[in-house]
Amino acid sequence: MSVILATAGQDDKIRFWEAPSGICSRVLRYADSQVNCLEITTDKQYLAAGGNPHIRLFEINNSSNENPILSLEGHTGNVTSLGFQKNGRYLYSGSEDGTVKLWDLRSPTYSRSFDSKGPVNSVALHPNQAEIISGDQNGSIKIFDLGSSKCINDIVPDSHSSSTSSQGRVAIQSVDVSEDARTLVAANNHAEVFAWNPSDATMKQNGEPFRPVAKFRAHQLGAYLLHAKISPDCRHLVTTSSDKTARLFDTTTWQLTQTLSQHKKWVWDAVFSADSSYLVTASSDRSSLLWNLRTGTPVRQYTDHDYAVTCVALNDSST
Image (cartoon, rainbow, N blue to C red; front, side):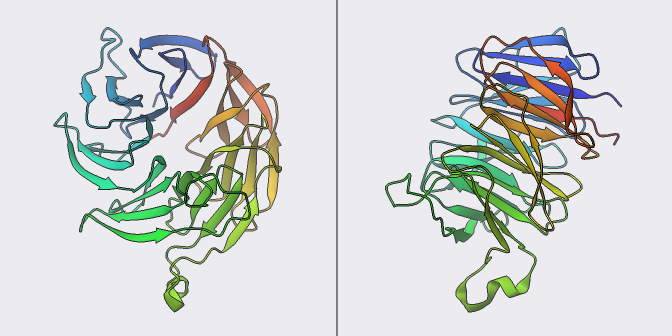
């Protein structure tokens, strides 16, 4: 199967790349806005791009059509994070307008909207496909149940950093859930990472659901954390930062295993290959790098953007 690699950012363009050669194979214009986030459907047919305040869906395999086939309208602020349910029929999104929305792609309007009570920086779908996790600028991690349409958990991790919100909390920058559903991570913008085991019943004792199993600082004091993602094999966590690095942590010990430090400016985003042995990073230095994680070295560079590259999407799965 083909490898779909796309990057975007502040130059209002989405670029598709031939991953092995580093050649840009296609450019799509994203009018009216920078691109904040990208996601590719499991079947590699469509690419979703989130901007301000819209979400647009593009055909991947029809190079003659440069226009979106669907524009999703309903958010009123920056769309900061999005993803697809496994069957590709539904898309979920989070926005600085304080909502998490669920979209049926057969319709241009959202089917459900959840109030996060604060600007949303990140959303993730639980592998059970029935819960959406959000992280917001008020320092809260919320779990929304799609069956009942209710918030079933609201977690505020105990941060040691100075507050960045009106409630005296530190903004949650990124959330993710591992494919085996055994690890939920949340990272705040001061580079503190919190990890829970949501499947562990003992985490729900004493009225304290989801007590962290790990808590650590991923980057040095003063650095901003921008993104955190668990690898498909569930063995690694990658964090990206204003300190120009991406860092890899072992999800068993939570020890630092690699620091990837070839970028010259902030590293905004990162995505693993399907087999978890490669990583693509996106940076303000206008480039993206493909890393071989066995050696810790970059093997390909993608450099055609005019401004910062803030998001990257990769689908190289064989299914």
